[in-house]
Length: 205
Image (tube, rainbow, N blue to C red):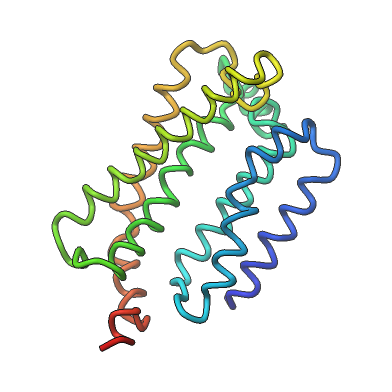
């Protein structure tokens, strides 16, 4: 699929999710990664195009963020249906979102490290990728803590803890699980696509 299609899908989803969003502040906090990341990818594309696999995953992640931002993670209808159908004690969309938060950034970090550092083909690539994903997850949890400190109960929609005192730990565990699954399932395919790209190092050489 052409990169412009991926960008168009992400931009459209972002625009649609803003219409009638449950909470405007929560929408912004949840989708700011797309608001910042999409223009960066477009502006850097000529010099640093991404693999098709990564483009697809980033677009899928943008859709997850857009849905969560529109409804808030604790009130996504699909999650409510799953909670009621399977007798769960909470809307699971937040857990799914944090799984994706590890799954997709793992390929992003892997691609950046493979193309801009000596780590391509190194046995350190996978563990350092996971560490980077966990660092991002921890930063996100600190952002949630900051939002709670500043906004008090007004930040509840963004936190989506749903009464779980271990929500932070579960969020980071889901991100870790997502990162490990991503590397285990997609590394070989990712390597094949990386070989088709002209990396900055290749261009300079």
